[in-house]
Image 1 (cartoon, rainbow, N blue to C red):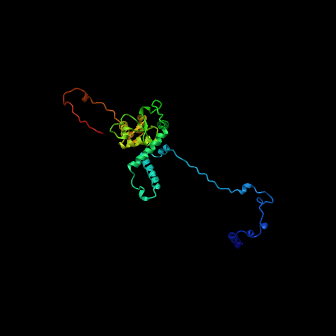
Image 2: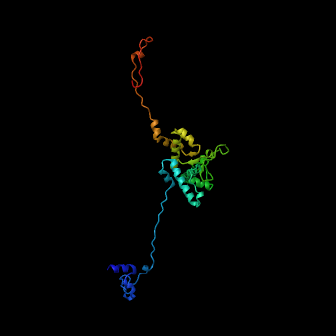
Image 3: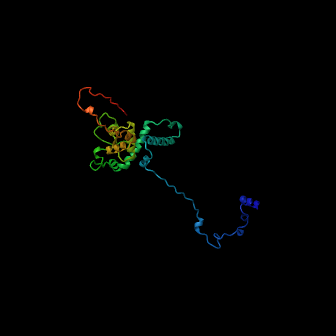
Length: 261
């Protein structure tokens, strides 16, 4: 029995060597009993359905509470993509991240947030249909730079200031990247208050309704809350009669203990 099983494994069943008239009949595919359905003659190919889930950039910024970590992670991703495009190892980058690469990653997130919150203004500027009265950003005289970023216009174009100081990047107060930028600047200035943080951010960014956005970040800082806590003061005791009654000099002398005594 074992020998016959091995023989069928290598050569198939013995009835294949016989005439087709001697083959065993199949009830489902016997031409004399039942006509073959045409659908059985068609080759059925297996289909695989692939679904791709895309995540929004504004939601991706919620995964990180630090701006520096977010920018570095995205910068390494950009460098990986660029290294794959170069087949030569000599043209690939493996050194430390440069300030230019970090700036490109930051501008990438700012551009995505502007598309999410200022889509109508950007479309009007691209189509040259922007009007100052119909837009919330009309007082800022916005324009699009060569990178497609939304910036403040203003009247300082011919000054000696840098381009970022003359034309700040416009940020929405409810954007996640705005929250990370404010928090990062607050920490860089060693937990500065509202005025100092606001004036430092104005060197590069123009946040719409900046007072509300910056105050909410500063008030939520745990370290600032601890250091700005109200100090407890003890109620002073009653003065003795010898100190409040008029008398001659040195008529009563005493020692005033300080501290816990």
